[in-house]
Length: 507
Ligand SMILES: Cc1cc2nc3c(=O)[nH]c(=O)nc-3n(C[C@H](O)[C@H](O)[C@H](O)COP(=O)(O)OP(=O)(O)OC[C@H]3O[C@@H](n4cnc5c(N)ncnc54)[C@H](O)[C@@H]3O)c2cc1C
Ligand code: SF4
Image (tube, rainbow, N blue to C red; front, side):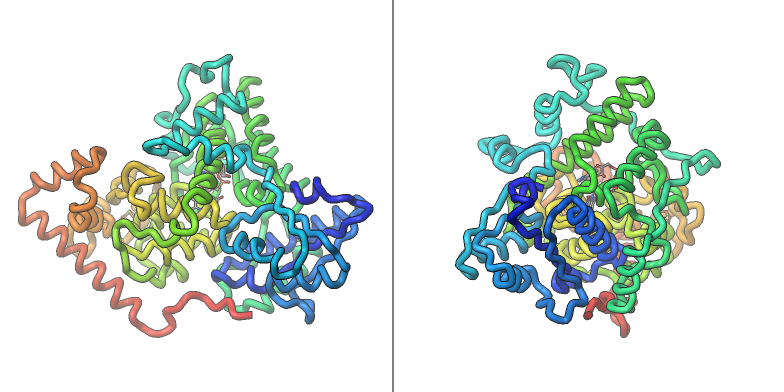
């Protein structure tokens, strides 16, 4: 971290604080809080062992004021410090706090760039300036050239920039799917688990089965295991989903990257080395590297370019409250129950589950994008606003009017049926379009297109679907819209009962 790099081990004090406000601004999954606090406690010990003076304020310290600003103020007084070094924030909300510190405390505050990313923010702004339209693919190519990753001279390795078309194969459950390594809690983690269990007994998400790495060494071990056992098939089955198999061939490293237990450029170089050594195919290495130097860096750039207004965008005017089953997992749609159930158990769902199951349902049902954003920000182990907000509001909900994606990720049940085994175990029939046993995604899909025709009909990528809608017999169109309307009415009715508010995070 740049603040540590700039600090002097013999003179400076490292302040680390666990503050209540950060555990409650959305009802975070309890595993997410445990992961963060335990990783902080382990890191503090590593710093002390390395000769640093660490001032560590615990969540249950009676003097803890519960906010970053309160704890910084107390620490400045405690140490008689006249200068504060801090790495730039990952969320707008926290940046606003930091921006106020110099005036509030009458202290010099030096904010240093976060060097845990490959593309510095000023470089992203330069790239975005004067472009008529921003597209991840062009940014990604620039990042390939800049980093030299998967480049043969000035040409992309294998003659193509993007092998996504090869990365959409479904998957059948078999005995050879790798069991992914989980890390049993040590004494430090167990202490945090007990603290969080006592503090948030009604909080969202299971605490049992916590298996995330909380040290750099274990995060490295997790990544090594991914390289050796999963990466080779990551590409082929990147979009596949299987009931009871939450992790498949995914990296499970987003949380480690986001908090700095792993380094983004380093993991990409190691993935490239696997391909150059002939141990994994190019579509796997390219698919993985694109997610990191492409999407991950791109959404961060967009976040800082567009905030603070971005958070309030709602281009499709969606207003339905978030259905209760997003918290409870209590729904008879097998795909939604599976994605939400594993989210409750592991604070994890892979990209396609987030985008094409919980995300697509919300899009089709017209759920308020801000309510959905707060859900995604709460429930995933890797969720921080700089990465979660553009993915949710932009990519998944089209609420930014097409800045992040050129068309909405709307799909009927056929997509989920093609990419998963969920439909076989569902009470709904994915082949039925209307009526009580028809897959709800089917009628909702057409209803979404019809409802938003004024806004979306002109989108060139939707020309064919609108042509199909226009050709449909009027009776069929009416039946689809009635079926969708009946489903949405039922949803609203079910949610009108008592005990339908998000889990309590009141400490
Ligand atoms: C609605 C929605 C919300 C999301 N919220 C978050 C979030 O809060 N935090 C987060 O880190 N990712 C988020 N993502 C992106 C992606 O789903 C996760 O990064 C990924 O599922 C993490 O699992 P993994 O490490 O096994 O990833 P893998 O599938 O193994 O991918 C490798 C890495 O690529 C990066 N990556 C992949 N896709 C994206 C993406 N679209 N944006 C940014 N990085 C990406 C991640 O760092 C990930 O670890 C979201 C996606 C959607 C559709
Ligand atoms: S039938 Fe529809 S609701 Fe059921 S699992 Fe398939 S896509 Fe989901």
